[in-house]
Amino acid sequence: MDTMEKDLLDLKNRCETKLKTLYGWQKLPYDRIVKGKGIISTIELTLQYMNDGNEDGKQRCLKELRDMGFQL
Image 1 (cartoon, rainbow, N blue to C red):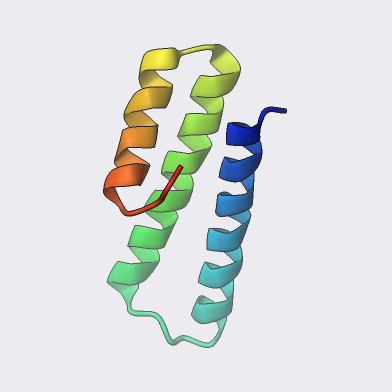
Image 2: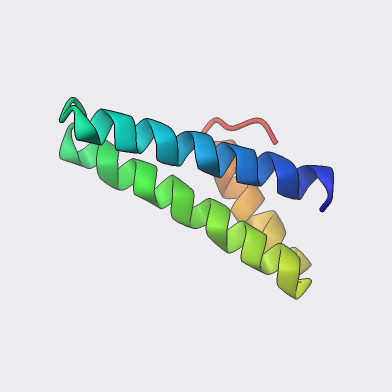
C-alpha cells in the first residue's frame, strides 16, 4: 500500500466517522450529509481507479477532491 492510498483510506475513515457522529446527533443538515457521502464516494472511486491502474480516472478524482479543499 503506497502513501497516497494510505492517505485516502485515512481521509475516508475520518469522513465516515465525522458523518456518523454528526448524523447520530442529528446536527447536520441534509445537504451536508449528501456532500459528505459524495466525498466518500469520490474517495472510493479514486481507490478503485488506483487498484485498476486507471491513471486518468485517478487524476480526475484527485483533482475533484483537491477542488473540494483537500490537500492530497
